[in-house]
Length: 182
Picture 1 (cartoon, rainbow, N blue to C red):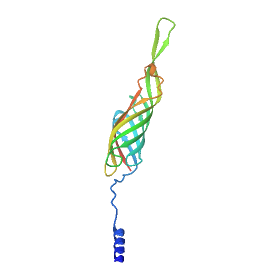
Picture 2 (cartoon, one colour):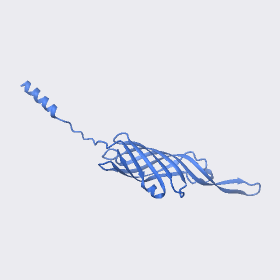
Picture 3 (tube, one colour):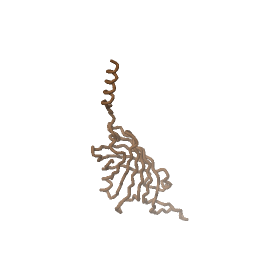
Picture 4 (cartoon, one colour):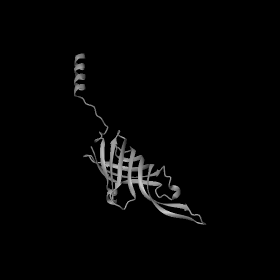
């Protein structure tokens, strides 16, 4: 009887298999492009790396290719926390840091040795760093194609020109992105 039980346990453990209910992550790397900025005359390309089933880090680079924009460039890094059922999909919240450079027109006041002050407009290229938060959603197909809607707001930290009427105290982040996870 003992031999029969030992042989039965051996066969059950040999031919048995475990059920893993976790969803496998389809790739850990993702490349994407922001379609809204592309239509507006700028190119934003991004890279995202999946850390685990609920979080990822990434970076994006935005630069204009038309003369209509006053943005010179924006380099953004972010950390995202996902709330979806599948790994790194669904609703997310993010914290980001953005190195940004803009061409801005500020008003410079000059003391004139008379009863009046004078002011004039001055064009400056201003580089600053912003911290911000964002929200969004991401969907992924079985083949790894991703679709993302996102938006966020950040505040520039080192703006010494705010007292002179600088226009870029806050920066926006967002768009409609299409990518591929591999």
